Amino acid sequence: MTQTAGQTVAVVLAGGTSRRFGQDKLAVVLADGRGAVDGTLVDRVLSRLPADYRVVVVGPERPTAGPVTFVRERPVGGGPAAGLVAGLVEALRTEPDLVVVLPGDAPASGTGAVRLAARLRA
Image (tube, rainbow, N blue to C red; front, side):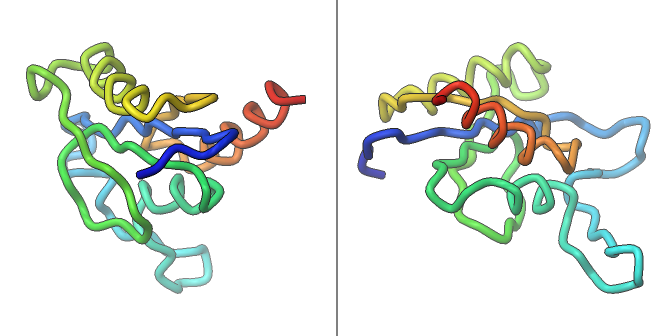
């Protein structure tokens, strides 16, 4: 991807094993409260990010509703610090103006990241 002025990269940490949940919680298809399919948990996070953000997802490749770059932490399963390092290495490759890091299992985190980016740029 070519760098553009004001480019923001969102690093989404999505490498956990979901042991307590019993399956990959980020890949579970959710309903919208009225019974209609509303995508996966990670798709809810991604849907709240602007289309001009470059998105790096740290974790296993999964189907997503939008374009993302997947990377893995080293070692795989190495935890959030290893995930953060892997995501930042990939994010900084394009020399962005801003990097936001958010959890893949918090649906409103995309909205929060956008608000934070706007405040930092103000």
